[in-house]
Image 1 (cartoon, each protein chain N blue to C red):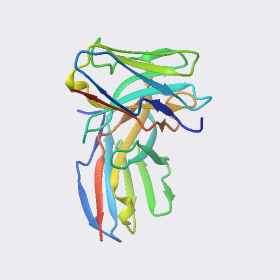
Image 2 (cartoon, rainbow over the protein chains, first blue to last red; image 1 turned 90 degrees about the vertical axis):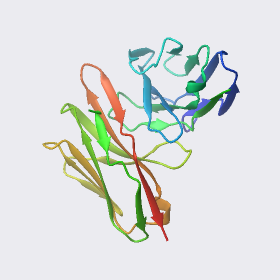
Image 3 (tube, rainbow over the protein chains, first blue to last red; image 1 turned 60 degrees about the horizontal axis):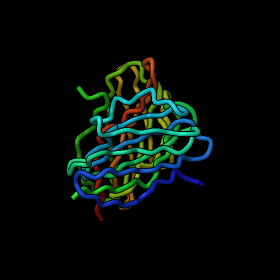
Image 4 (cartoon, rainbow over the protein chains, first blue to last red; image 1 turned 90 degrees about the horizontal axis):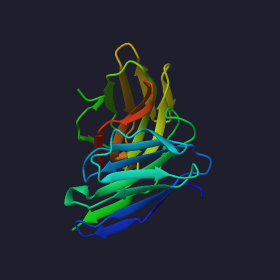
Length: 114
Length: 111
């Protein structure tokens, strides 16, 4: 596609359930990033992929969070046993090559845990 | 100390005003610098890259001072549509690549 595509755009889930968020980066972009942004707050880095490997997982807030990327393209962010504090918009971004190049963001997946 | 720090804001300015945002970064190995703009409940979008010699794009001027580890963004002749949050972004390679976003500075331009 022309831009970074994320799904679902909105998700309401019950506390304790697992959720999967999907990101389809811009075609040809080798780097993929996940960020989290709570309402009125700044961007919180979660994880970065170069190809299928994740050289930097330092931002994942707990072991309930995991992410994978397959085929150097689509990535999935999984949150297990969701908590109310997980409510936020999860932004995926991609860039051609490593960081230092322009990062393009998707519109985000808005997660609400009730 | 945060790796990227920005003016806390918010900045409230009238239309036509000139406004400047500052950003400091802590890691001298930082290599690439950007300003992004984020509208309310929207994703961040690139406003402009920041080059060592300084660069201008219409009403927007960005400057970099590597010695002081300082980046600035100047907006001249502010428009209502400039109201947004401006994010300072730094990329570096310290054995692994990293892109760090500042917390952002909110700008409100009023008629």
